[in-house]
Length: 414
Ligand SMILES: Cc1cc2nc3c(=O)[nH]c(=O)nc-3n(C[C@H](O)[C@H](O)[C@H](O)COP(=O)(O)OP(=O)(O)OC[C@H]3O[C@@H](n4cnc5c(N)ncnc54)[C@H](O)[C@@H]3O)c2cc1C
Image (cartoon, rainbow, N blue to C red; front, side, top):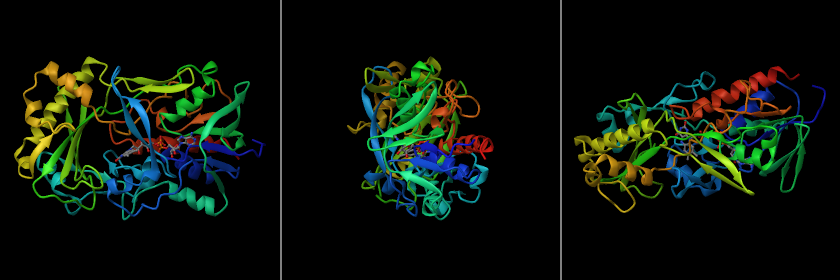
């Protein structure tokens, strides 16, 4: 590579910051990161809902969860470090080896009453993206910026200019940034939207196809003794449906930063089959997660909700709560318990909760090294390239894949 045009990374979230710091250690080429969000000042704050209540760190995107269903707002990180700067701190799968020591297992001392109740109902401690502070890859990038090694442009990319299947310029409202290589890391909803908005579908087919997320249902637990805890979520429970689908229950001590009278319990289908997409209709971008589109997913989710009902009505939860509501109208869990399967299926489709685990919307258009097939200098390294939504909390697999793609790319650079 002879050009001194920079490597341009678009989106400085979990993947983007991992790519920037990995590449910065492997090449002396200039690196420009385009990220509209600023640095977070909350990396020492363990309470997830307190961080999330800082509205400067995220924005809402309208999403469709089930085909034909009404749109619901999806929380999308907009901060240096992305989802890792604001996420729930849960690391339910393996710890990526290169963050060894920066995460730790939750302990009894971290648990509040909702977590303790789930622990008594076959729950287990989760690993946390925390060891005296939040693991946020934006911090490493901030050092590189301070040292003059990386330039950050605090704007949103609006489209990519290209000619003869080579990307030339990333455009923002105020800037046109030329580059030698472009690495997309704007997240599983925005990365395909930007490629489509740049009219790349003429060169690459399959952009946006295969979008996935974890179908989730949440109940609100009215606590006998209101209170919060240092961490909002520390205990989870793994289980299987009759078809072997993987389910994950999570206990939360509060419903948001202000409500300490209620906790939450949620259950998610962690290995869904159903897939949706991101597409362009005229000039507007649209998406549909198309959850519960297969019979296997619908039955698994029904069994999941029956499991959550049993948990909510268990002695451990009865001991801490006076009422469990299943929707914003305060409908009791007992009402759900007596529903027949058909009625329960309809209720589930209408009451799915949005979780910010979008993935896989570009997995069909990249090769094993994250290179977009058919475009000379375009890579993708964020959650959109995962083959399917991870069956554990997603930040771990996103980090591992981003680091692998950056290392492979870095080896081709001098
Ligand atoms: C509220 C919340 C709670 C979560 N809880 C957990 C959890 O407990 N455990 C877990 O493992 N995972 C959790 N996740 C999911 C996890 O954080 C994400 O899977 C992961 O961060 C996705 O990484 P990414 O790099 O693909 O996208 P992101 O980290 O979202 O990064 C995308 C970045 O692109 C930027 N961007 C967007 N549009 C543009 C544009 N036009 N131009 C330039 N930049 C742009 C955004 O500002 C953002 O910084 C949570 C996520 C959220 C939002």
